Length: 363
Image 1 (cartoon, helix red, strand yellow):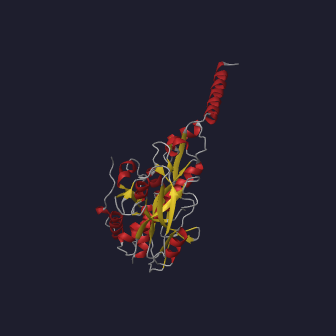
Image 2: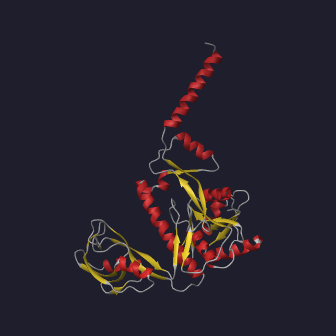
Image 3: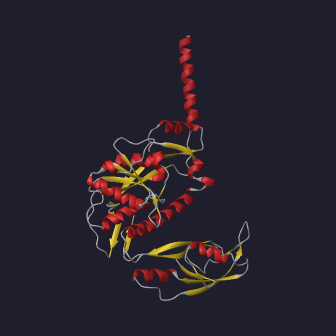
């Protein structure tokens, strides 16, 4: 066989072997890529993303798009070839699998956690929006968030029960529940004063105060680890509102849409357009006070926003440095720390006063 032919054959076989190795060699990485964006002022699957009942609303044009990130599943085994392609791509990010699914978190656990965070972000968005508009009638209460299966509380307390007091001491924050329970020794009883979830829901629907409460006695047990007393519940917060605000968006999880939901509510409850008809996208968690927090996958979200047509992107202040490293052409990153910052920025955008916007700078 001629030397040149032999060399070409050996090179071809070596390349084929490398490709096979790349396909079959699994690596501990996952991939993030731009996900779809959804206009919080519009519809999704034929239904309004934000629907407000029993209160005057106003038509809103323009876009206030929340953004998402696609990630590979917990059970997905990435091969070396896919990892190399992801590292070379401008529209994808390859990260250690542990970053997305720490401590062996399963797909089911991740989905459940994201659903809980998404639900909480909606509640905080409602509170922040109504506070921004100085709307009266918003109140917060402590509720049973989850009941641990097989715990002393199972069958006695239920998710959604409103906790008014523990051992006669009023409860004003979720942390108060644990503080009072841990004062007991394992094996001692503790008394909860609660409004059952069904009654609390009925009262909220009818816009009235609950008609009564129930006292429930639970015997504590020893917690694993330090052995303090527990009953097997996790307390959280719930809110009551002066009118109905429903947020519906399927196949989305996590807390990062909070800011855009809040702005969508503000826009629908105020005359005129916050955006002036412009295409604005953004991201950021939000708490009950209106503070905007950082999120993950910021670069993927800016890419997805620009691909959808956004000209401005509301960016949490703590994400500005990372987002500024790779800004899609034609997209302006606007730095926000609170819902108040965001509404002021939108006023400038609607008027075309973009020179005065607080923009993210390069690190």
